[in-house]
Length: 170
Image (cartoon, rainbow, N blue to C red; front, side, top):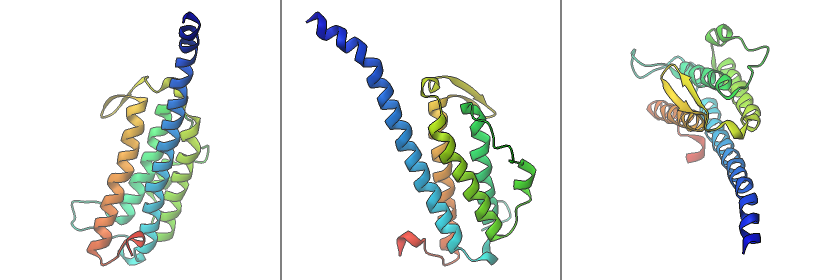
């Protein structure tokens, strides 16, 4: 009986680590799903609608892509990930037009897919302070995922207001 308990005590941390590996892998897959949908939808929206917004108080289609892209880079340092050497925040602000906006988003989403597996799983409980509050790195992963989902929904609404059916709904 003691041998079984010793084995369990040795294996418990490994089981916890395996669960974190699965968690991060699944979250990465869901981020890719959301981000792929954002790109599909952006490609379906006509170029002349990229500066369209339902009112002056909200951001346009191009601005949504820029915002979601910028957030990907914003979160990286909170996970201990270095920004790409060629990343320039001011260049992202100057992105205009459909093709450049989509390319910028694709670059940001590719960077997220690159850095998510690099996150040190042993630091997920570590608290980080963002401009909008203190969160564990695990919570920040959920915030990051929800953020892309929120703006995917915003793009869906914008598209439908302009008679564009999301490609996956056809």
